[in-house]
Image 1: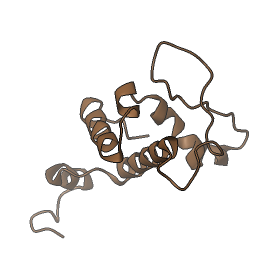
Image 2: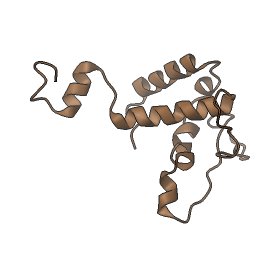
Image 3: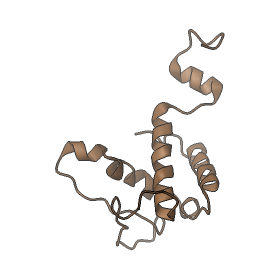
Image 4: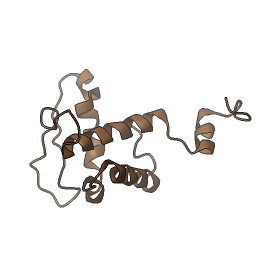
Length: 120
């Protein structure tokens, strides 16, 4: 423990140390993996896990992922399902990042602009 932090709540400690919650870090890591898969920077291929959406709309970005319906509640929590909504909410400028570092910066900016973006 850090001196002076013993009696603080979890949220206060995170705020004072300028850290992300475990949930935010997990959701950010999911988005990073999807980005790497989408750009071909991961050993995991994009297509067995995801299918690009064929719906053409004026909102969002050009790399939207189609959401597949699930019959089992368990399937909603699989990586390939839980990350889709958050990925589809990202702006085009973040998706178009040329490398992982700039994508991370874009995610950090999303968190600053839209508090709770990484929270379920």
